[in-house]
Image (cartoon, rainbow, N blue to C red):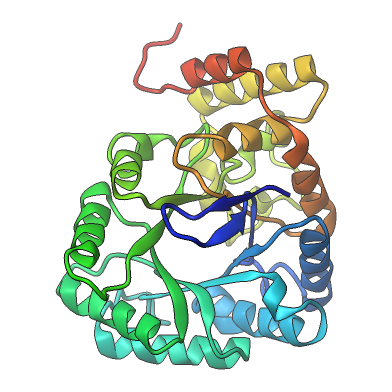
Length: 317
């Protein structure tokens, strides 16, 4: 699998990342082991988790696998902090550094390669939040720093603050939802990332699974939309406008002799500023489909057509 630099940093990551949000909830440890093994065998390196995923179970499972299944040095390990277990945002230095130490304990590692601020906390001065990032990197507990779910102005402010003084840890990545069904980051966040040299890590690059085409005729039993804890997550992308985009993806896939998943993932993977889409799979079979899609590069005419049909700011018949 091809590797890319994360923003203007020297950190190389595989151009597809493995998300672990469902590990410990919908994905059991044995299945997680199969996924991680397949991902690493395919040349994947970037593995993304967070302290709040499955109440810490995702990190614990990943930590076990790094001891017994794959070599720790074979992956770029990324985690996040800034959300308390009760769901409140907390960007204080006290919470962040304690959360990082707890993550390292669950992961059973001395450091993470990429430590990300999970959300922007408006109640804490940004300079305090970023001082925790500096401490994490200076102490060796994190090698690089990123952010997640930041607005364009928030990313620009954080990146500028870190670049304003020698010795501060630069912001090298921003994680945000981005797909053919969700292109709003192109208005402000993506331009801010490109200007600051920050690599974009799209989450939900398959439109929460809708771009695979599996919801075209209804909600299949066993799908995420059928699960009570995921139904509200998928429902926003089941309207007529999204259905029109999905049909265009299906048409493109049929013309190329590939799957809709291949087309949707290739489109977002090769957008300007994107380093690596983060793809989560419930099963190793689903992950296998994702890994096979890495071989596809979309012809420019198809890319242009998908750009046009997914531009929700433009009128459509």
